[in-house]
Image 1: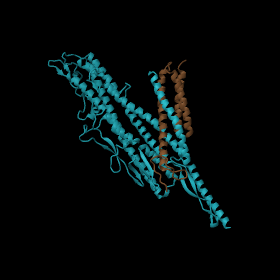
Image 2: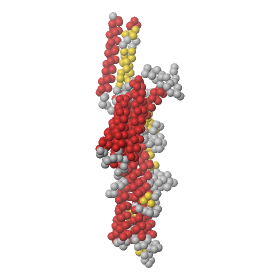
Image 3: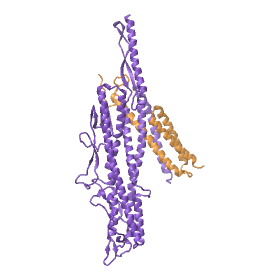
Image 4: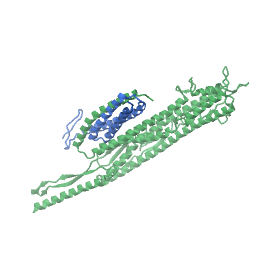
Length: 118
Length: 480
C-alpha cells in the first residue's frame, strides 16, 4: 500500500477539526453536539493515520499537515475555553443577582453568598 | 348601556396597545440590517377588571424592552479588544520584518557574507589593489545595510508615534460621540432603539482601540472607563486622553536615546503602564519594548547598535594592530569604520567607512612575532566563523547574532498572526453567542447553560486527547 490513504486520513482529521471550529463559533447547543461528533471523527482518523504513519513517501509531508492540524486543535481548544469562561461568568452573575424567572429572589445556590429577602 | 360602552372602550384601548406593539415589530424589521441594533418587544400591563366599578379590564401598552444582553455585549467588546491588539501587532511586525532579510539577497546578512569573502580574497593576494578596493566597497555595503536597517526601524518608530496619536484621537472622538448620545438620553431618548444601536456600535469600535468597561447608569447614560479605571465618558463629559513622549532620564546610560511613547489621562496621569490591551496597548508595547530591543533606549543600546559597534570595533582593532608595511619603520594600520561613539543608540545609523581611508592603507601584516604578511585579512575572514571570543557577541558570531535578531522578529510575527487568527474566530464566536442570547428568557438562559455544560465536558476531553495525539504524531514523523 502506498501512503495515500494515510494522507487522506490526516486531511479528513484536519477537515473535521476545522468543522468543529466552525461549530464552536456558531456555539448553539446543537452545534456543540455536532462538534463532539466532528472531534470524535477527527480522533479516529488521526488514530488510523498513526497506524500507517512513517510509511511511504508521503510521511515526510505529513509532518507539515500534522503541525497545521495541531494548530487547528489548539484553536478549537481556545474557542471552547472562551465559551467556558463566558458561561462561567454568566452563571456567576446569575448567582449573584439571584433572581428567578418570576422575578423572585432565587435560593442561595452557592456557599458564601448572602441573599436578602424582605 | 354603560357596560357596553366600557367594553367598547376596553377593546379600543387594547387595539391601541396592539397598534403600538405592531409599531415595535415594524421598527425591528426596518432595522434588521442596522449595525448594533437589538430587537425590542412591547410589554403589556393588565388594567383593572371590575365592571361594577366601571373598570373594563383589557391591557395597555407597557414598556418597550430591549432584547440586548449586556453581558454578551461585554464579551464581544473584550474579544474585539484582543483582536485589535493582534491586528496592530501583525501590521507593525510585518513592516519590521521586511527590514530583516535573511534570504541572502539583501540586507546586513548578505553584506556580512560579501565582506567576509572580500577579506578572504584579500588574504590570498594581500598586495592586490583590486582585492583591497573590493574590501572597501564591501565594507561600504555593510555600513549602508546597517544605516538602511536603522533608518527603516526609525521610520517604523515614527509611524508608530503617528499611529499612537491617531488612535488616541480616535478614542477621544468615540468618547465625544458617546457623550453626545448621553446628552440625547438625558433629553428623553432613552428608549430610542436607533440611539441604542449607535451607542453599542460605537462601544464595539472603541473596544478595538483599548480595553474598555461600559456601564449604564440609573439615568440611562453610559459611563465608559479605559483599563477599568481611567474615565473616558461620564454623562455629557468627555475625559480626553493625550499622546506624549518621555525622553530618557538625565542620569540614564543613554540620555540621547529615542524617547518612549506615553498616554496621559485627562488629569495628566501617565497611564502607559496600565495600557496593555487593544490597538493602543500594541502600539505602546511595540514602541516601548520591542523597538528599543533593536534601536535602544535610555538603558540599553539595542541589538542592532550592539552588533554594529562590536563588528566595527573588532574590524578596526584588527586593522590598527596590523602594519600597512613592515618598514622600517613599520606603518601602522588605520581604522576602516567610523561611527558616533558618543551615543550608543546611534551607532548603526552613523556607521560608515572612514572617508579618509585609501585601499593601500589597509593593514595586511600582523606584527606577530612572527609577522605574517596576510595575517590581518586571515583574522578578518575568520570573523565569519570565529574560533575565539574575538568576533563574538554572547558566544554567537556576528552572522548568528544577526540571524537571531531576524528570527526574533519572525517569531513575534508568527505568534501575532496566530493570535489574530484565533481572535478573529473568537470575535465571530462572541458575536454568535450575543445573537443567540438576544431576547431569550431566563428559563431559556438556564437551559442553554445546562446544555453547554453537558457538551463542554465531552468536547474538552476530545480536544485534550487530540492535542496530545497530534503532539505525539509530530514527534513520530520525520523532520524532512
